[in-house]
Length: 223
Length: 223
DNA sequence: TTCTTCATGTAATTAGTTACATGATTGA
DNA sequence: TCAATCATGTAACTAATTACATGAAGAA
Image (cartoon, rainbow over all chains, first blue to last red; front, side, top):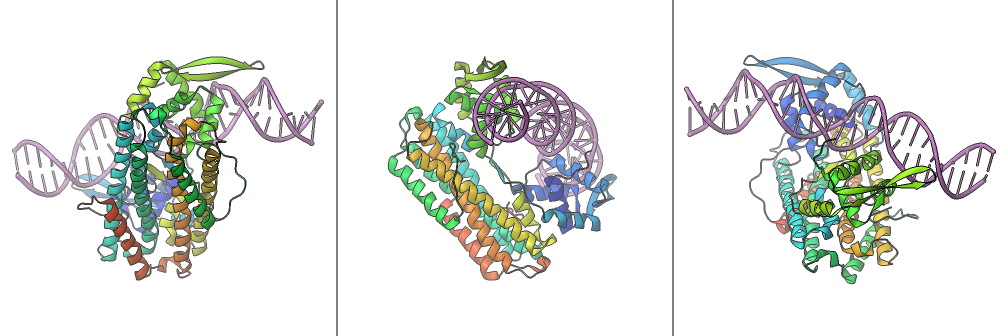
């Protein structure tokens, strides 16, 4: 077992800083909260806490349920200090993996129907995620959600996610309109000049709000 | 070498469907285009094409530059068929990894200054990416970009990315305002009721446009 | 000519996933 | 009491990353 902490280690340490959890409870949090911004497989949640214990950042207590053992993890003072140090460090840049987008990027090698189906799937995913986010927000407002004392942090992250899912759904709708206008052979697809100008113009206006551009060496999707 | 194709394999196959590339040129594309939606390390781009060749989906030709060999890969007809089949398959859901968000989620265990610095870093990243995206769009409009015949696909994906980067930057600005109002001890931070209601209300309006919600079992950040 | 950057790869390591196994609990 | 689901973990595997090595080209 390597002894260097990864972002995954700190993410779990962060959960332990909220309260002690059994491993299974950690997997629930991965499904319902942390996994939205740092997705990891269940088995990781059984493995990483052992590393935290080995480094003295967490301690494990054995419990039993029937004759079966289970482990509950809690953060240590040393763990809290390590977490605080990590929060002050620079972060690695966000990373997005979107198979839907990859398929759209190469859409000319499939059919128009394929492209529309891919967009519909992306939209459905986003709508479902958005509904979940909204429901979580409503629950907080109603005081029905756990960890009310963490509402400020949850609101910040939840708002981002909610906006992101809305963006994906709206983009998919817009992109579907575009694809509808493609000829049946997608290799012949060309964007309407006016549409292209419209999106670039929109990006220009966004850039004004954003400020801070310099010279850029461009590729297909960015410098 | 496993013989099952991953999304990474197909992503590279998609690039080869555009034109033949040397491995180094593939790494350039990863830096400038594909990497925005399917990021992978350089060394993967030296490894995966070999698998495609082994499966008959691509062929390799040896070239030399000085006395040093280099490999150029091209897609085969069988490769084009495989790519087309893949484009018709369902996609795995998008995945976001954002260390910045993880730190905001656990911000109460650090200082207010840490949180603001994390948000500033996220905003700077987004602004830079947005500038790159905009520049790429401008280049296309000016006819100065390569692969003009792929403009329709590039516009779809590029618009999504541009909007995403703008969203991140705008969110970071909004979140910074929120954090500014926190007390010096972030464990005491509570969102202003009005702000919380405002974001939930916005999500409700988005949901109306999106349609399609049902009953949801909520966690902290979603069902 | 030497230094730096561009270019081309391989090797070693690891972070993470998938698959498996099984006990406990609950409801029909 | 049987089946389904919840809960707790381990083992095997692999996809991917980091580190390393070095030739070629261009600039100072």
